[in-house]
Length: 416
Ligand SMILES: *Cc1c(COP(=O)(O)O)cnc(C)c1O
Image (cartoon, rainbow, N blue to C red; front, side, top):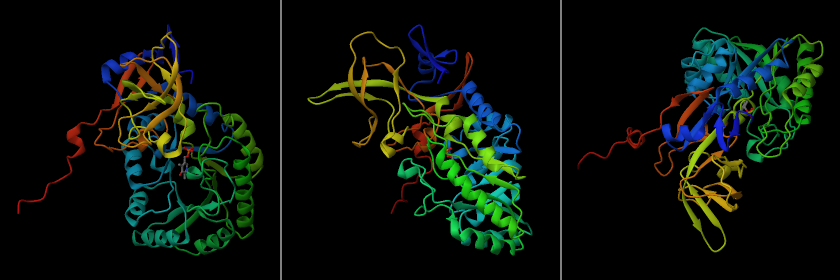
């Protein structure tokens, strides 16, 4: 998080004071550091520099066009989960030949769009999807490149809502069924088997679940080879965690070394789908204290950002560090940091020790992933602005929504 640092008692993003960003673009506002994004991508990739590999940024973690465009320039591919994300990647200048398409519910229209774009691979999550893809590709006179997403049945040891590799999840095909589905796929005229895929969850802070899953995938790759089905790439998914408070997620280098060691001499391209690990600590949510409200049991700091802007605390009880943008030296007390939304679950942090006055700015740290991407308009709140800082320069990368935007698509009933 070195790109968000205190200088002369004021919090900066690179070389821009967050106070200046608030004055210029108002609050709430997402602020990203360009150098932190670049650094995360380069350091993830560095571990694989001697291997045939492709890093596909998981678009759903932060789909802003400027971020996609930045990663595209760095040579990234993209992991998409919808036709909307496909369109975003193409609009941002992403290379279709570096796109993998994940997700359990791909529609025929989404398959057509991806086939037309000429993507790298479909990560197929069920037998029914495989059959549909064969039909859709056939009608277009095309052959679809495919991996099966296998469910290795390993415990990612993360929050149950973001754990995807256990056999009771909706994701992927059961490990024990995978070989038979591959054999079936091998006979389909409009399916070309390219890879094997797995993704076991998100915010994983230990190496062992990745390695256990990879062992199972490699065993399947070897079994397929014996059946005469040659696998060209293995997609190991995403899910590497970040530090929100005191977690110690695997270092990229250690992860890369361990995965390559397991791969051994197999001539297979490695594909990865990191999201959070590339953007999470490259962004903060800047917010202003509207009211301080002491009550009998708690002190509330009511801020102008809310669960609609950053849903993770309300959804997963997730922890985000909260820092004063201009720390005061007056005595600090414990605050509940809450938003204006009409839900008791609308909080950004519990029991935070801060010295605050009304009008102060706060930075909700580690908000670059699953922040703006999960934002909604609940309570008819326009979504926040997004700003990218590059050294001493600020770029508005998404304008603040207006209230008029919120109901632009709505119609009242015709007069009776
Ligand atoms: C969400 C998701 C990712 C990215 O997960 P992170 O934890 O953000 O790295 C990668 N692959 C698939 C299939 C996903 O659903």
